[in-house]
Image (cartoon, rainbow, N blue to C red; front, side, top):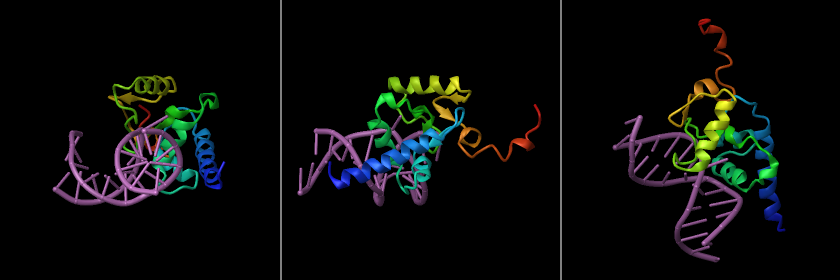
Length: 119
DNA sequence: CAAATGACGGGGT
DNA sequence: AACCCCGCCATTT
């Protein structure tokens, strides 16, 4: 274990910890997740952290999507379908592999709820 | 050790 | 909207 590795591991842990704070039914982008962990320009780092995270960590990895609302995995990738399934289980609307970030992103939609007509 | 690789992001065309 | 291009940064080749 090199000191440099410790630093990386630390950042990974911060990212995973931040991910655990994301409630069901909401999503967050890779970049914003890293930012919440105190890391700027860490989108790709967030990817590495998730990829290296052991399955037994039981993380809500499916709540992480691209900034534009699209699923990170390619459409044909098996994990893509898995992520969509998990999100829908939580009530997140996914259409054509895309999510309306103005409604489901963490921190979005909350302030505008009251001005929505009551259907 | 240099180069390639990604579950990325933002800007420009 | 759909691309392309480039910057980013840990991990893998």
